[in-house]
Image (cartoon, rainbow, N blue to C red; front, top):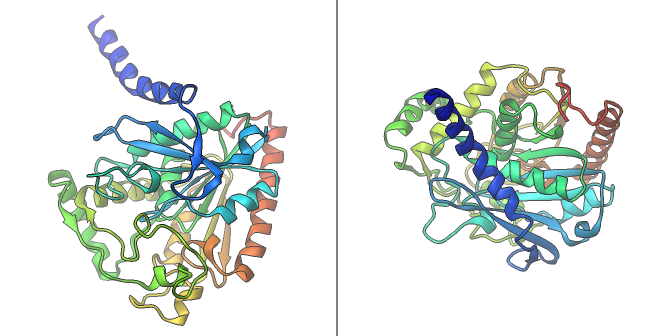
Length: 358
């Protein structure tokens, strides 16, 4: 009897916070997204259980509030990032796909005074309640077929989530330059040591340097075409903690050591080549200035049990959807064609994933 009661307490401690966060949706209002994109978007703040009891923020286009789309996408941003890509949301809407995004704990709209930007010291599982809640919100809004899409660290989080939650309501997975491997050259060999240090001193801080190549390739004030909140998406990446490094490394290692762990159709998209300069040069405008695409592909193609659709994008930036229009136009065409094909299969299968889970 004591063991049964202990098991019941454990289950309750895990399930109750997720249920409580989801229940808040029924009582918390959506508000105009005046803090970022303006009245054509709206956001919903959801308190979540964590080491600092921080919230996540769900964002959608206002037009989707009264629409009953059968298909929808949930977008997860990368590190030193938040959702600001209205053009991407419009592209999905133009193809009849409801667009939802989440600013994770300590990012963008969810960042609170006194919190360390982007920090996650106790495993990427910290983000699972935010994803669960966002998926539940989408289902309550009438979305039946959900694509989970993640960029960079968001791609790693999405992959890890799908590996650990094969019964989730996600039908498809789209990975945009997912952070599946470190890109530190010879320093990669030190990551096991740093990861171990993260278990002992999770708050120990490390600088990420002063590279501006990627930011300058994006910002309209320099060589790109985008405007965003530079307090939420910094020109120079913020410091990270040993705990964050450990969280990333453990998730990467899990995926490497469990090929075929993702049980839904998966699309992997990466730039053709990397840019390794720390200061902006013209070549940074047509390459991945953050990660090493060949290494991402090497790991990424092993993730899904039924194989991965692998797309190499010539001239793509690290965030492929922020590349120049000559790159994004054909990429969007392929993306929507791929999603449509997978969604049709999902519906024919009775709205069940490959495990038979609804």
